Image (cartoon, rainbow, N blue to C red; front, side):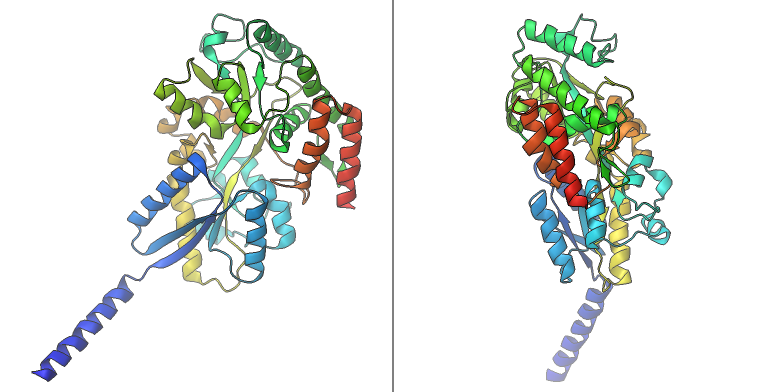
Length: 425
């Protein structure tokens, strides 16, 4: 009897062992910096992926956005303790290349993921590649600032067309006229955005610079040639609006949002990521007016809007197995095919089949401002640019004070030019 039990136990152990092997999961370690609504949506996508893939399990970790995230990545990859996949801002790509923290993405990798470069908007693929065209990350979205606006207040004015979209704002003078009208009609801060920090000010400044065809960096030179004058024009435009009381004094990010939702601003230039905020307030009946969002109007020579992309990147790990890399690529391909859920966060998916779908066409206001994907002005390709970079510091320390009258536009541009050039030399 004892022998029978022993044989039964051995057989059971063998079956369990074979079963465990047959159903062994590849555990993919995932790092991201996604909080708030972005974080909720990404977690839902991860949960859905895990439910559909018994052979792959994503184990996700969310780290602090900005410099802490990228410092952690750099340190972890250097000692071979990085994740298997991570989210990455494409504006940080030049610095990532210098730090050698990313693994190149080959054509074979794309085939494994079931995607191709042609599936993505050209601007995002360009931002995800080296100067010679080597793909280093796979874009997931294009996120930009948009013009959130109070439709109710603009109803019946010349600045709203028959479809309820912004119109007749095709110059700085026209925008100033509309903001002045709003000021005279009870809006204390007609155009709100984050005026106290480098993030909001940089996005506004870079949009105005890019609409002039201006560049921060040209062949390694900061504000070369007439780019200096274009930078001065962009700074002076914001300073003029501030001196006329058309934008708020020293508004924090949260204050900029509150000025719009509290009907103190008729326009709010902020990221697409705030679309869910105003949608939620509309559905809850707490906003108090009809809201919509368009691409930032072309007020200067050409259409252009500051933009960045969240992308998926594979850390540079020579020890990564083929099995793990294939699992990671499976994750990336699946996420692209399910990126309509990500669009719910306001972002424009970088994956064109999603944007070209009937489901996306019905998603508003996203479908209306999707045109900005063709006019996306990504940060300069430089180690001094991108999220939490020296350029953001220079904007915070020089351009923001100039906008608020503590420094002339010319002095701010000159000091920024000297400061950034010194970092490149």
